[in-house]
Image (cartoon, rainbow, N blue to C red):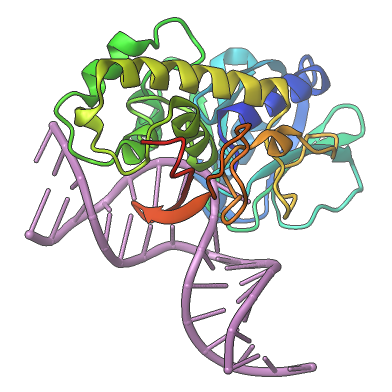
Length: 278
DNA sequence: CTTGTGTCCTGTAGGC
DNA sequence: TGCCTACAGGACACAA
C-alpha cells in the first residue's frame, strides 16, 4: 500500500511523537513479522532504547535509536503505524512498542507481509539486502533523465515493470508509476529501451513531480482506508489521481474524450488513458 | 543479466 | 445467507 509519499508522510507525522521518547519494551505478537534478529532478540534489543529521529529510504521507515541501532519498518501492502494509548487495542496488531509516556507505537499488518528489523547502523544483515541495493530517490537531485536513460537503455521489459524495480528508482509503487506514466504521456506496456530522449526526460520529471505532489497531499488513501495518517486522518492525493483506480471513467485532462483503461502488467493492475498516452 | 511467473498471508468484494 | 474466486498500495525466489 504505502509508497514513498505515504511513508514520508508517516515519517513526518510520527517524528514529533517519537523523537526523544524511550521504548520501554516491545511485544512481538506475531513471530514471522520480525525479519531480524529472532523475535526474542528483537524484543530485548529494542527495550530501553531511546528514539533519536526518523529517517526513510525508499519505502523503508528507519527509526534511529541510541547506541547505534536502527529499527527498520517496511509496511508492504497493508502495514500501518499508529501511536495509541497504552491500553488501547489495535486490530491486526503484530508488534507493540510501549513508550515512556503512557502511549504505545502499534504496528498493525493484516496480511503479515510487512516486516520489522532491528539492526546495527553500520552492519545491515542480508535480510535487508533489498534496502542496500536500492536506487536513488526520485525526489532527490541524483535522480535525473540522464540516469534514468542509462538504466532503461537496452531493456525490453515494459517500462511500467522497471518503474516498480526499486533498484532503478526507489519508492515508486503501483499507484505512482501509473500516474507518472500518465503525466509523461507514455503507455505502460512500451518497451523501456525504446523510449525516445524526450520521453525519458518527461518520465524522469513526472516521477519526481508526482512523488513530490503525493507528499504535498499527504499520500493516497483509497476507498478501503487502509492507509491512514498516524493520527487516523486520511491523505488526499486520491482526489488528484488521473488514472489509477479510474477504469471506465473519463480522462481528467481538459477536453480529452479518452476513457481510462485497465490492464495487467507484470501481474499488477495498470491504468492509462489511450488518448493521452502513446 | 534479463524476463516473466509464482508465492508469501489475510481480508474483502463480487458473482452465483 | 453462504460458498467460491479473484484481487489487493510489495518484494523475492525461481526457472527459462
